[in-house]
Length: 151
Ligand code: FES
Image (cartoon, rainbow, N blue to C red):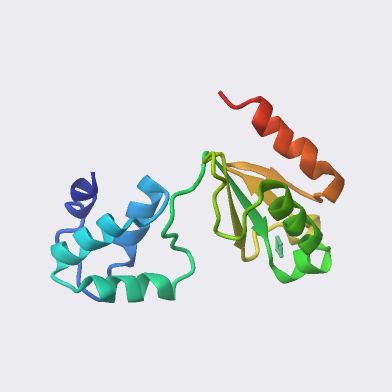
């Protein structure tokens, strides 16, 4: 419940709401409209102000993640290692753009900043599982794995 998260921050100041938003995202995976409205009511701040603050930081998401959330690094080093070929292949196979979610709700895609494994790029992750030195020829196999193991 959003309320139980808010109760953990009884003395938070209006200019220090980031930890609350981080906590909500950690629990729900994204910041829903409902959650932002509740934060606004709790802190007596306009919803637009909360949105304004949250959108300033690119760590926050405003849409639900799919069951299998694909993050793919779009940092400089991975870019040099031809990550765009990987990104485009995933987009083509799943029929979604960055930030999108497949119609069946199975996959969502997020291009991220450096994922911290620059020497092993291109790097991508599906939920908590990381893939390094990703080769475009491996993409069908990786996606198939999740399709076949979906229960
Ligand atoms: S740039 Fe991709 S992991 Fe650092």
